[in-house]
Image (cartoon, rainbow, N blue to C red; front, side, top):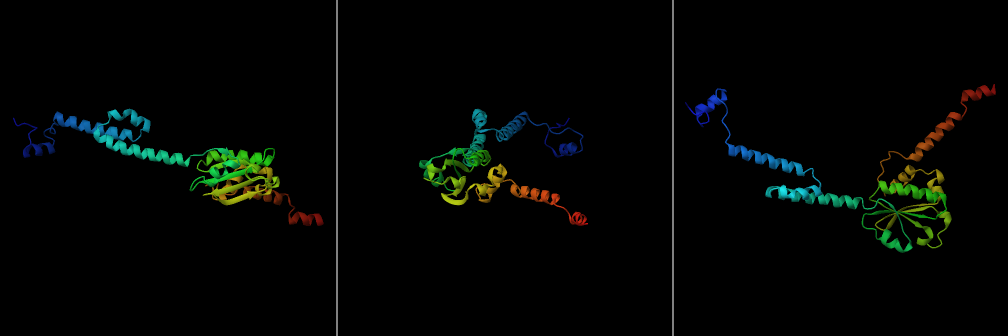
Length: 237
């Protein structure tokens, strides 16, 4: 009887017609295919690993995997470093006049700095510090600072408080001076965020000026309360 695993033209025809079973794969080839699948599984797995997990499992990778993993590790490290640079701040810092040059003027190329000059005991200054502390956690690539006004600028008048200076590369890009600029104690965090976004310091996700919404609501309320022409004519009768 002819060997069904023999490589003959006749056997190939019989296999195509389903008369004889497919040729059996030698065990060594099966083992080789299994190794390939395992290697592919390893490579696929490390793509989802953290840098710490890669280091823990690096003894399990073969030479071919190690090259790919090293490239991947470098890529992940570069991404991590970029994230650290982008998120390097994240809080409202306090400085004095002695820190001004280092923290503001020499903050670094491409770094936006928002400096609030304030004095304790002035309610609107306290309010703005509260808003800035929250915004600092949202926009971590921007340096948010506060300083008691007279420690940075001797004899700086209290009537100019609160004051916010916006810097880029050590140069002033915008300034907001006095309580009227901020709208008094009714200033909301979103309104301050919008104001700072207009200076270019932050990239807000607000779609429109919150102050405009309040103004529109106020105008709508006024129109509702105003008598119509028909009501006016009735009064005249």
